[in-house]
Length: 101
Image (cartoon, rainbow, N blue to C red; front, side):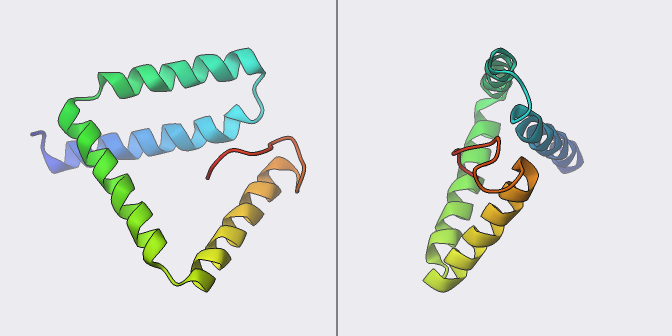
C-alpha cells in the first residue's frame, strides 16, 4: 500500500478536481458534460481495486452517519446544502435543476 502522504495528496487532488468539475459542469454544454463524465468514469476505473473499496467504504460511512442524525438536524443540513446549491446556480429554478449533492 502506498504511503499516507501520497494517498492524502491523491485524495486532495481528486476532491479538488471533482469539486471544480461539479461547478463547471452546470455551465458546460451537454456534449462537454458527457465528455467530462466519461473522463471521470475512466479515471475511477483506473484506480486500484483497494483504493476504490476504501473510497466506497468512506462514502458508506458518511451515508450511515447522516442517516443516524436526528431528523431535524438532517433536514436543517439538507436545507443549508440546498441553499448553497441554489446560490451557485442562480437561485431556485435557476440553470441547475435536480441532481444529488
